[in-house]
Length: 389
Image (cartoon, rainbow, N blue to C red; front, side, top):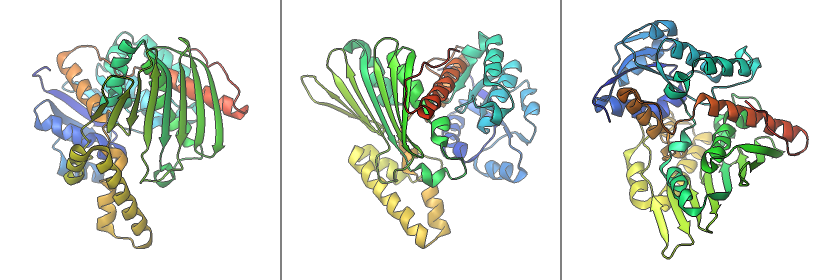
């Protein structure tokens, strides 16, 4: 870790950035590892609210003012998906390091530009685009998943991967059109299939039982298989994610909601727990409970927050609604958000190429896989070959 403090700017500071990245940024500032030089959001009121929580040197509604500032080393882009790619390209051209939220690539109907054109613009900026731009496919940084991937090399590789994601997306995703989970969130797990196996997807199939329920099967070039069950029709009291893998040496593993990893097929039982993630403004008592009690404590917190959510549906209470908003169980899980930003800032400080971060190429491949999955679903689940970048 370098001793240099990185000067960063944030472009787009919406709800997701406030809930997830704000706490990490505050910690990095407190440790002297970065300075928040500028905040770029359209609303003056939002800038004033942010200033009450985090110190920054100036605010502006004009992102080009940020990019023209020679003192800014890096930008964190939390703007909507429709402008993520263009902002990233402009920032790279201005000589900035870039951390941009996923998915970055989106349909031309959303962005006004063919995603293939964006991809070619990123290619024209290589090698810097590949070395200095990190896309927020953050699950690569989840401690449990990194451990599985590291151990897989000793297990003759992963042969089958089952990823189950059952979310209460109906609760938070009402502003999006039907089918949004496939284009907004599936990129995470399609990327993980490539990351875990070190191989490309050669065929993909997708079946859908109802809106926001998809079963995706992936055949990898190295012979491995991955299955993703993605649903937005779950509830807050249910564990959202489970990873189950088999390997060439018949050593298997299960990771539950990033909080616990259990490895099977070894002489001794191996269970490992991971530290919880503090959401901005979150209740530290929940974090301590998870860190001390592991998966069962987290299960109890899920139930507690679910009961609170249900009470608020019939008896609204502004204070309790704010408490729930700052203590969403899904945001307590150590799924890589924090570490992805920390390692990005450390790379900027050291002037060294990014490691492990998803590149613009990874994000584009994920976009193409989503498009292939949609094509398969429209054809009744037929296997299709994804387009090549």
